[in-house]
Length: 192
Ligand SMILES: C[S@@+](CC[C@H](N)C(=O)[O-])C[C@H]1O[C@@H](n2cnc3c(N)ncnc32)[C@H](O)[C@@H]1O
Image 1 (cartoon, rainbow, N blue to C red):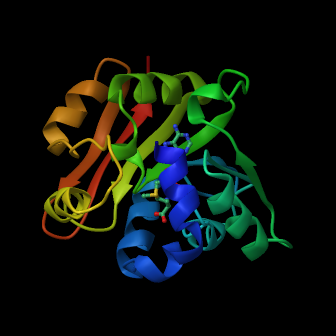
Image 2 (spheres, rainbow, N blue to C red):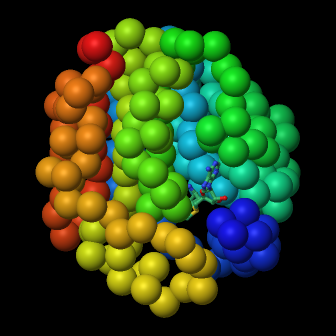
């Protein structure tokens, strides 16, 4: 199970993964986080992204993950910072409709089995004109190769950005999509 796998690797996670900081900052610029924003980070893990989200001084940051071990590490890192961490499955979140200005799903998307349901839930949680960003700080090929070697199953292939755009399109206006040798992202604004 996803949760068991990440509980097991949590204390090694920050040593196992290296993140491209320039790519992270570029991705967060695409997410268009600003001072007025409430931001939800889905599958935050050990809180890698929060440090960079906070550089944009958002009004509120909520970060969720279903692995309690990952969340414990994240909480320790940000004790004195304005981040609300919660150990919860994304689909069990019962926040009010239209609560967030931005939702970021960073390096977590392939761990969800049903991509359409993830996008629908993001649509529900976002305010009108809110933005969702699915992002990886490396190429789709790198992500999919990495997942061939890990014991965690199921894990889906990250689809070509154009396939993800068609999942976004009924309810989001996609205004940014990159699927190159350096990064992967699809970003859309809630219009419907
Ligand atoms: C590959 S890790 C990425 C963690 C972090 N974003 C990073 O880049 O280091 C994926 C994370 O997504 C979380 N996750 C997967 N499915 C989830 C779900 N349904 N609800 C909440 N978290 C989930 C896992 O527990 C795991 O911590």
